[in-house]
Length: 330
Ligand SMILES: [Zn+2]
Image 1: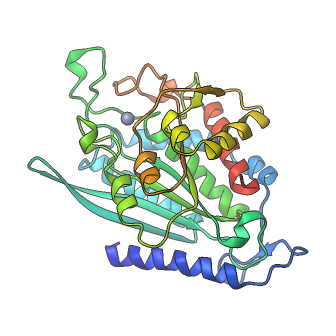
Image 2: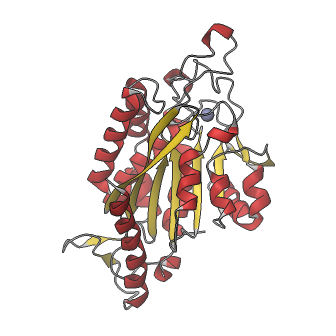
């Protein structure tokens, strides 16, 4: 898919906002028509939680790892892109690639952000969705080409498998895509899977896809968003990420307060470290974003970031929070 197709997708997003703003609300009815003439019922958080399968999400994590390490330019990177694109097409109203080229030294990388849109269709919708609110759900699908934090020096030029660093966030979002199809959310959801997050040796050549996405938003902008990164660790610990907090305290507090209200123990009501991640370029263009990340992960950027370090339960905990925000709003 080319840039023109993506532009058309973004135009479509904007048009969707208009159609919602113009429609007649009818609080008695909870039906929407997301595609064609098929009537679909607006889903609830309860239904979504019942449909979300931690085992399926974990299988998606495993599937990505079966492709092998997925750094840009590798055959596994291309195969994973095809897999994610094809899967999202089963569930979303619209799926598009956002291609970009990026040069590092003498090497030109061909990267693709993958976007999937879920529209509530015609009114009535509930909550803030009535005004065309859009929630962005993000993760990165590439993996790091070098295990530069491996304890063994001989491993530090080997690509990582990225079971947690990459695959975990994508796994949750892909399983949620299936849930959104079954139970349409009452607000517009855009899933974006960023490419090139973990590429460079330094931060200068990281977050490549999210920077490009932020630069090319044009007139359309999501209202707020949630980034998932390293959320599959068996020993899940999720303090408040400091860059999120410093940029938008009320929004960030609302997310962590919701986790507390839901009794999700891994979310800790304390401030953790500031992490440079894909949320930062989006915050810089004015989008409130939280980064849900467990940075206390001993296998970070090592060849030990493998499936056995992750658990379905962790994916479920994070999905429960995301479902609550998607269906019940802030
Ligand atoms: Zn990483």
